[in-house]
Amino acid sequence: MANSVVGTMSFKRTNRNIHKWASIVIALPLLVILISGILLLVKKEFDFIQPPSTKGQTSQPTITFAQVLTVAQSVESAKISSWDDINRLDVRPAKGIIKVRSHNSIEIQIDSHTGQVLQVAKRNYEFIESLHDGTFFEKNANLWLMLPVSFILLFMIVTGVVMFVQPFRTKKKNRLRR
Image 1 (tube, rainbow, N blue to C red):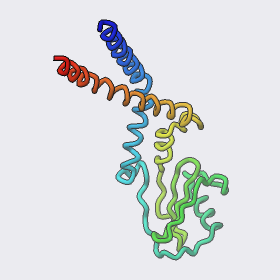
Image 2 (cartoon, rainbow, N blue to C red):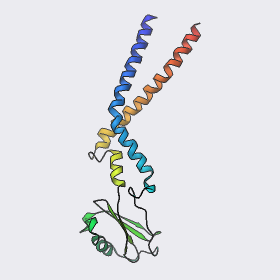
Image 3 (spheres, one colour):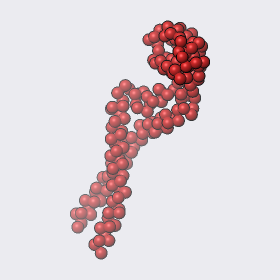
Image 4 (cartoon, rainbow, N blue to C red):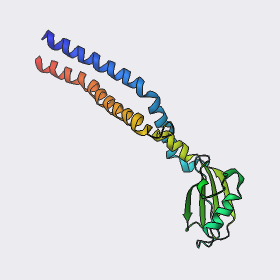
């Protein structure tokens, strides 16, 4: 009987210690994931995260890719001199626009019919996403940082449930002994 109590107490103490230190280890990475996740959830509500899409004149794109590059080059803040400086093109026929994203996170929205620049804005979505998955810190941080943090969190959930359930099991055993 005494051995059983000592074993239980040792397990509880060890479990609490592991739980406490694991919490400290994952606190900062988990905080970054949590805050960036919240920002990603509300990205369309805040223009500084993701600029709103404008509308072009018609849904029929008529400008060429060469014209898109020329228009993008005319926006100084984007620092585009060739196709190598463009990260992504996003053609939205239904809205009549072409979004050009430079490598420095400037988004240019161009009317796909007239070639007119409709909007130029900084796009912070990719930065926040890179914080969220860990690639901001290092290209493979999602594997060597975020994956272990995920496993530690899973372990903490399991040990937390065990710590929560243990007193109920003990009370039930004591009631059955009487």
